[in-house]
Amino acid sequence: ATEVIDAIKKCKEMRWLRLEGNTLGVEAAKGIAKALEKHPEFQRALWSDMFTGRLKTEIPDALRFLGNGIILANAKLIELDLSDNAFGPNGMQGLVVFLKSPSCFSLKELRLNNNGLGITGGKMLAASLLECHTKSLAAGTPLALRVFVSGRGRLENEGSMRLAEAFKAIGSLEEVRMPQNGIFHEGITALAEAFAFNPKLKILDLSDNIFTEKGASAMAKVSKLS
Image (cartoon, rainbow, N blue to C red; front, side, top):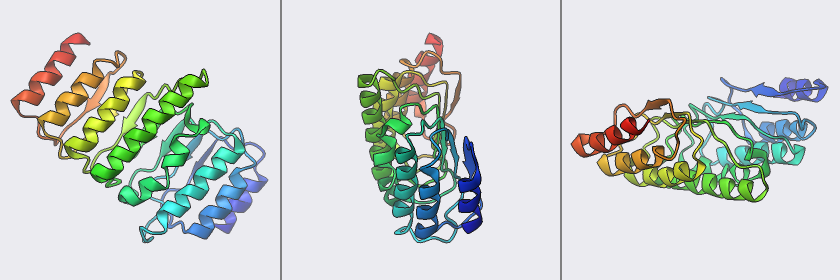
């Protein structure tokens, strides 16, 4: 982590940072966050698979520090990728403040694949996105999220239905991938209704969920609209 921190400090302009394949602890995250404070031009946090072997109790604090570093830099994030970090709803607690901050008003791509958010984490994520959208509208810079990925997240009906509310409000989605989430036809129907409010949607992956005839029918109606 020391080498990464030193490199960030020396870098005159840093638009992205890739930390995948690491085992980032709280102190390392704190150091990286402090270095990020000097980079208002920062845009892409490519942070998949960076908590290997870490306790779930460590991850929320690490995420809070990293998010605060970006907020204090007044950076405007375009992409956040935290895929393959199995932090569950506990980890989501470390993200909520950041996701609602002005640094995320500019977010275009949100990738949270294989995080195991569960229903609770999914609800927290949805609430954060809705608040981000509301605040960004009030600020005159409406959230225009294009890509949302959350596969293998155990979102089930309740989590996906809350996310559908957020998708409906946002209205700018072009790509949505939510495979293997245990979503039954009630959740599929809610998502289908939300997708009708996203006319630019071109890529949709809801594989390995339980559509049944009711869910398939609801999604088919939306497909006809597009």
